[in-house]
Length: 370
Image (cartoon, rainbow, N blue to C red; front, side, top):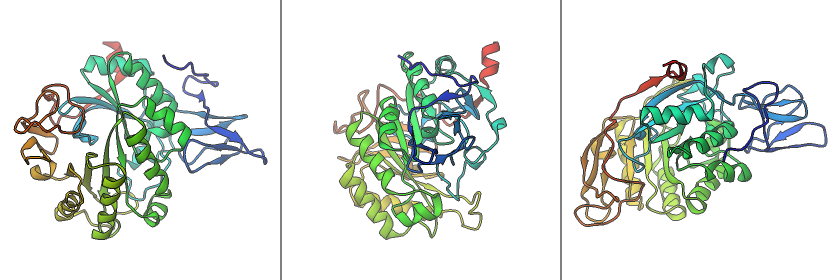
């Protein structure tokens, strides 16, 4: 059952739980490891959590920067209901400050006008149902900063049999992490690099909280987990770092967590960095598989071999992919290799969907009027 939220002076502003008062009168936000300390009228770095009076509120509840029906493979999730459509949406702001952000127009937005459409959790669940989506994805900017909105939407979706997908950097504290992931069915978590230096200098954050989130999701929840690393030339693409990262994943999370190595393109504050060569992605995938990762993929490039799924036991191609288009399908309805019977890790429930690579923008206001 959905939690009853207390609205504060507006239908878009709700009271929040994860904060406490400091001795100097400031309020500390405890949602993420930034621990923003706010005086009256101040916003956190994320932009959407702010101090109003004697509490911290979420200022973007029920407001979105846009909606789109995507292939689930775009999240990217290759082992969660393949071929199915997902209703994707985000808000504004972010709790990291990645210099290469490729959604910077939303994640770095400080304008409420970015939030163009109104959507209550019930509206989103109804829209997903009407559009034939198997899931809703909280994406574009990081959903941990609009936790209350995401959780309520996930509950509304669950009541209609719609799954919830979190696309997140995993930069969240322990208590809100438990609440957030309790309501998710799948997650793709960005492991942006495997060095504290990169996290601090390039994202403004820290590595350890992300590793803690990965361990938590894998070992203490039923959430289906996949990992993405954007491979940036000269920053996180050394053999040493990729070796250490993939060894850590196999040791701490196990061999069945899929890893996606995706291509960087120059953006925002890193326009001087060249695009990722396809051979760098292939090299990262090879290192991962040599270290025991069973499902390693390349992304943001055309590479049917690097984007297809193979049986880790007999080598049969189980799911053929090129970008977001599926071709080969060699799995039983319960996700086993038709050749040798070995189970492919993931969430499968019958034949693949046929959504393909389509991207369909949606205006909920138009739907409500029809």
